[in-house]
Each structure stands twice: as C-alpha cells, then as structure tokens.
Amino acid sequence: MVSEVETTQLPIHIIADDCVDCGICVKECAFLQEYGSPHKLAANWLESVKTDPEQNTYPFECSLCGLCHGVCPKDLDPSAMFLAMRRQLVASGNGNLQQHKTIRAYEKRGSSALFSWYYFPAGCETIFFPGCALPGSYATTLTSLFTALQEMIPGIGLVFDCCTKPSHDLGNQAHFQKMFNELCQILQSRGVKKVLVACPNCHRIFSEYGKMFEVETVYEVLAGSADFRSIPRKEITVHDPCGVRKVESVQESVRTLLKGQSLTIREMKHNRKKSFCCGEGGSAGYLRPDFAKKWTAKRVEEAEETTIVSYCAGCTHFLGNSTETFHLLDLLFAPESTLQKKPWISKAYFIYWNRYSLKKKFKKRLSSGVSGTRKELILRPVE
Ligand code: SF4
Ligand code: SF4
Image (tube, rainbow, N blue to C red; front, side):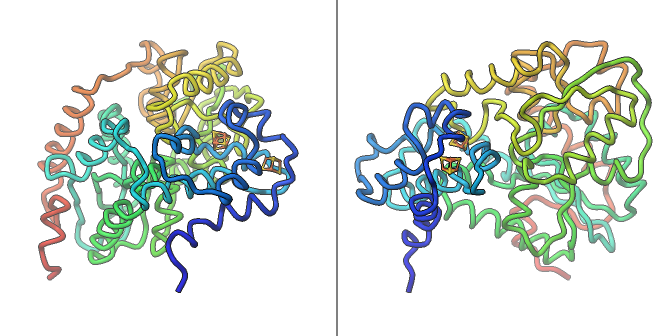
C-alpha cells in the first residue's frame, strides 16, 4: 500500500526529475531568488527530509501563486511541490502553524453556527456560494447580485460557509478534507448539482475537489445574460487572481463584462496565466511580510496608476491598500457610487458584522424551503 508521505512526494519527484533548471521561474519570483531553483530544492528535500520544524518553514513562505507554473516552458508546477512539502510537514507534526492563528480563526468562524447558513428552496439544483470575503466587505453588492441571480435562475439556493482553502493552503490536508467533504455531503444530500461561485479561490477548491458538482463563476453567468450600465471614458486594468490563472473562460467573461460597460482595458504585462500574486497568497505574508510587499509592489508598478479592477474580494482589499482598486461586482451593480467614492477598506469588526447582518437579512427574506446552519443540517435527516 502506498503511504500518504509517498503520495505527497509525487510533485517533488516530478520537479526533481523533469526541471531543467532554466531559471525562467526564478527570474519572476523573490521567494525562489532567495532559496534557489525548484530543481535544487526538490533534490535537497528528497535527499534529506529534515525533521526540525524551525529549519523547515521555507515552503510556507511561497505564496502558492502558481506564476512559476504559468511561465514554465515544460509545464511544471513548482507551487504544487511547495504545497506537497507543507502537507508533509504538517502530517508529520513538523509544520509550525503558530503564526497562522489569525487566518485559521477566520476560517473556523466561516463554518460556525454564527456565520454559516444554508438555504435550499423547493427543487433547488443550483446554489450560490459567495465564500467568506465577499459577504464581509461587499454586503450591499452581494444582495443585488443574488437578486439578479434569482431572476436568472429560479429556485437558486444560497450557502454562507467557508470552502476551507486556508487549511488547504497551509497543508492541513486532513482538516481540509474533513470540512470540505462535510460541506459537499450537505449539498449532495439536498440535491445540489451546480455550484456558482464569485471567489476565484472557492472556484479552485470546488473545481479540484468537488468534481461531483458543475462549477461556474457568477461572472460567466452574468456575461452570458445580463446588461449593465455604461461607464464611458474610463480606462482600467484587470488583475487576474491566482485561483483562476488557468481558467480562460472566467478571464474572458470578466473582460466581456467590463467592455460591456464601455470601459477600456489596458492589460498589464503579467496577466491571465502569468498574473502576479496580489501579495496575500498562500498565507505567506504571515511569515514573510517583505515578500508580500514585493509582490504587491510589482502589481502596483505594472498598473502604472491606472485603476485596477479585480474579481476577488481578497485581492481587491490587498491591492486597495496601495492603489485604487475596485471589485468588478461593485462596478457592475453600483457603477456611479463606486467610481465616485474612494474604495472602502473594511476593518475586521465590520467584516464580521456585515456577515452576521447579511445572514440575518437573508434568513428573514428567504423563509420558504429548507434552511439552517452547517451543524443543524448535518444532524437533520433529509425528508
Ligand atoms: S508559487 Fe509563486 S511564490 Fe511560489 S515559487 Fe511559484 S512563483 Fe514563487
Ligand atoms: S521554469 Fe520550469 S524548467 Fe525552468 S527552472 Fe522553473 S520549473 Fe524548472
């Protein structure tokens, strides 16, 4: 029988065997410039998997952004190797996650009785899964979006919960699998076949691990069937989030929506599959805020003072601390007020308050059908 460690070694073996040390990915990445080429790191790792956690924090400093994969001429994925290393360290008890307490607590609250809430109207086969960051910072826009989705997809359900991507990225695979499987079980038991997401990270998790569902973004749905008000004479640039760097249909639909608003798009040099990380990826900033700052600075530099539009709430926040950045959904559903005011960067207290208020509001508004928190629905038998 193949052990878990052997299975997780696979991405490391692939890099050790196939990377030709061309240096292309190293040129793009501050992390690799400090620690060495993927080939060297893979060979060293396989030679001696060290056991001292203090010596092994470096895989947690990679942002898991996948730019290395995007530029590799041999289509190799060093980010998968660094994730595998994280998993090995955590599984063997050598992953020190003490410094990631904040993000782990944030994730835990997402699935708690206070913030999680599921709503399945009669005959529901499609649900909207907004994720954690969007309800926290874009509550009004999310309400408008869901109203639009209800008009387009009668019988659509709504699920406030966390996809557990933080644990996935921290290499805490056992916890991730337990939580994500539980979420999928609830959806499947209620007859859900399709999951609509707004967050590129949720898209990645559902596409990779929730293969029993059809997965689509709200951007693809909106681009195919909705008209939005024009915003003439405004040039913007697009920041493609790492979670969908390989998903052309999502990138294309975002541009279709922006062009539909008469906006002129000036593409940055690093876009789509070669997009830079906003700086928040892989929770790397908890250990190396200097790396996170470098990635943000590179993104801001390429924008050259053009307003950035992104379609990830996390990226919009992170970049919004350094340059004018809007969420695409805000531009679609409230273009005038969005452009007139300075981008609003919400603080932790308001984020949680928004999520709680939004859940309360929807609970009142969506009263027919089956509903409840994650825990309530796990325990409640399906009639
Ligand atoms: S995933 Fe990103 S940070 Fe990590 S090695 Fe690749 S390019 Fe560098
Ligand atoms: S770009 Fe690909 S082949 Fe070149 S060093 Fe990076 S992983 Fe190796």
